[in-house]
Every structure is written in C-alpha cells, then in structure tokens.
Image (cartoon, rainbow, N blue to C red; front, side, top):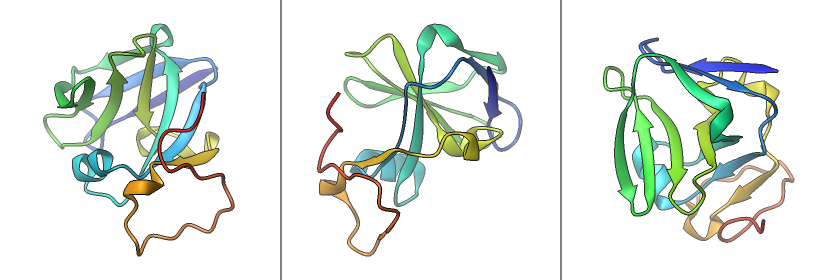
Length: 132
C-alpha cells in the first residue's frame, strides 16, 4: 500500500509504504502552538517505510527530545519524531492526500485540552499518552 501526501504549496511531497501503526488526535499544548489549531491528527509509520520524495522540509526541536518538520515555503507542519522512538515517525493526518483513509482511534493529552473543544466522537480519551 502506497500512501502519499505533502504540504499546502506542493514544495514538499512524501510517500509511506504499508499500513500505519497508529492514528490519533493530540490535544497537547505543543502540538496546538506549533500548528495553530486546537488539536492535531497524527498517523504513525515505521521510519524505514517513509521518505520525502520532493523537496526537503526544515526541522526544529519543539521540545527536547522532539524533532518536527515543516515546509519552509508555506509553513505546513509535516512530521514529528521523538528521540526515544527512533524507528517511527508521525505525520500530520491532514497532509495525507486521503486523510479519510486513516481515521483516529483515540484522543491523547486531554489534560492540555482547550475547554471549549468538544469532539463527541465516542473515541477513547487519555489524559496523557495512550498506553502502548
């Protein structure tokens, strides 16, 4: 299975192969501030099955030990990688060509949630990270 995606302006394109290992919505303060959105959807892939196929994103450390990438031209947040989990990479769900293909299975970091944000989708919620 080939999964394609990229940034808003098209300068960055990526490809992942195989099924993702996780799909979730994060409500943490850092994801919120970096994206400018009240919550962010993430899909996780094995790093060895993911690659950028057009352009090279910029990278920054949002909070040690987390590295994030984004498009330097349009600002689209693209990936999240934690040093303690070097074999995986999270990709912002909304940057997938078909974000409907991988609906979230849960919400994480509700301890950071904005009080007026209510989903009502019935998915499991976790005050911090979901248990492995």
